[in-house]
Amino acid sequence: MEPGTYRYNAEVVSRSYHYNYHVRQNYAHYGIFLPDGTPVGCFQLKRMDESRKYCEFGIILQNERWVNQGIGTEAIRQGLSIARDQFGMATVMGDTSSRNGRMIRVFEKLGFHLVESVKDAFFLVNGQPGDRLVYEIELSTMQGAVNE
Ligand SMILES: CC(C)(COP(=O)(O)OP(=O)(O)OC[C@H]1O[C@@H](n2cnc3c(N)ncnc32)[C@H](O)[C@@H]1OP(=O)(O)O)[C@@H](O)C(=O)NCCC(=O)NCCS
Figure 1 (cartoon, helix red, strand yellow):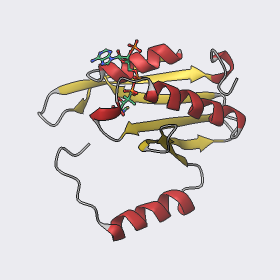
Figure 2 (spheres, protein in one colour):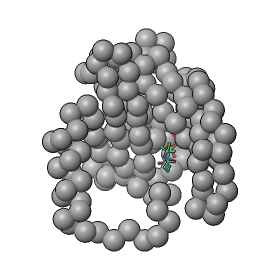
Figure 3 (cartoon, helix red, strand yellow):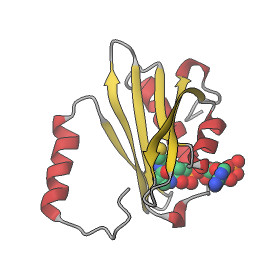
């Protein structure tokens, strides 16, 4: 993520929205909301490959105010259910930096397993390197189906 202050630009946001929602056919985007409707983040299923039944996911909560409350874990759990039940995916992949302990913990909680580690593939804004950790989950083995 960019470390600087985000400056809203309606034209750039509209162009991005159009591309993500109307051009990229194998992507699906979802907002993450609290029960009272407050928007707190977003989740994407990315590069969904129908023949391999394989896709990636991405998630980001809006800011530190919302982290460590179980929201990310629950959003991913629901997203995995959607990948399986609505898009017929069998395997979902996610990656993160070895320095992102919170995301690693979320992968572990959800039952993902580490399939690849690429040394020094990511750099923090302060220049510190981190390994790229690639995780996968077989949706057939997913514990505790969502919406049940
Ligand atoms: C990563 C992210 C999606 C996780 O969602 P979240 O709602 O904060 O996570 P949860 O509250 O569901 O779970 C966090 C877990 O990590 C643990 N944790 C927090 N910081 C940690 C750290 N530095 N090292 C290890 N574990 C940590 C928490 O204790 C919790 O585990 P527990 O339930 O066993 O106590 C969210 O924090 C986020 O959007 N971060 C910024 C963007 C990002 O990193 N996206 C992922 C890029 S791949």
